[in-house]
Image (tube, rainbow, N blue to C red):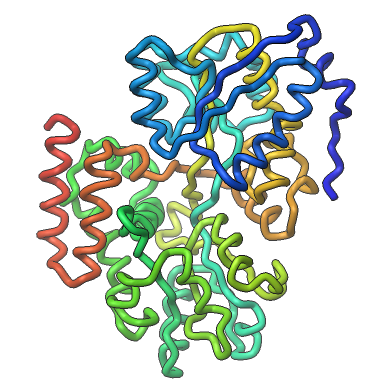
Length: 421
């Protein structure tokens, strides 16, 4: 059981909350089910010690609901935003509160790496905090199956491809890939492209690509797709071939690593896939029956960057109660509860490693806090017509066999409209 480092009786004093008395904070977010239960656990000591009632409203259509409420002059006090792009839009329109006057910035700079403060900032002002993150640049595998066949964890891209050839040479497919996700089908492939871009072109070119300062037909973008294609379009590499990749749900694909015998040996996916592994195979033990390694570097010049997504929170109404909640959510004490309940990774370096519920989540946290380069999921930063539209569709078309130039030219045409030329 995780030991909470903060005694409840000291919470109010630590955050200077005792004088607030009864009050309330309205909050809007997407969380439901297990995530909402975990967030309520995070809030429990805050509400008990301050007397402040947090009224949380959950919706999967957060962008539309938040936009409507802001336009009507009825925003929530606090909102959990889906991505930095939404934060920038709201900050540019003057709807967010500058948190530099709310939080102790010296403490923030000591507890958060600069990349997290930059991602939460717009024009030099901090408008959002990160309460957790998902690390995406991971390849999952079955250690016992690896050991039985004498396979070694690769440390470079060439070694990973050599391992893929070795596995394929035995008549077994090395990779399991699932691109099906209902209306969002294709998104797992966008993560592949983003990871490869960071490893072949570096973070600066990645940023220019996300901002559409280089076209989708740029050689750097094309190369990332070609490298992805060397795996996903190779029928010797992927269980079920391209048809299998297109028709397999993203949450089911990892299960093929744990069949007897395994139908595949490698699966690239984020930290959240652990919950899908245990849902289908509840008796598996983290670190013994399943494990991961960081997606290896391709060009040594760019090392092993980390790609991820994160839960971010912003303040839309400046009230004493909302200020108190933001201070609490930014603290390691609140985030310790959040990551312990969900197996997520905290961006706050002050969250102790023993707070994480299993060795693999601790391992992911170490990868995240030690990464020299971190970039947010690029498709989440792009205009929706591209990031969750043409990009997703392009992945499906490319995997289905469409010519790469045609795919990239089609996405570029959408981008020209979405970014304003």
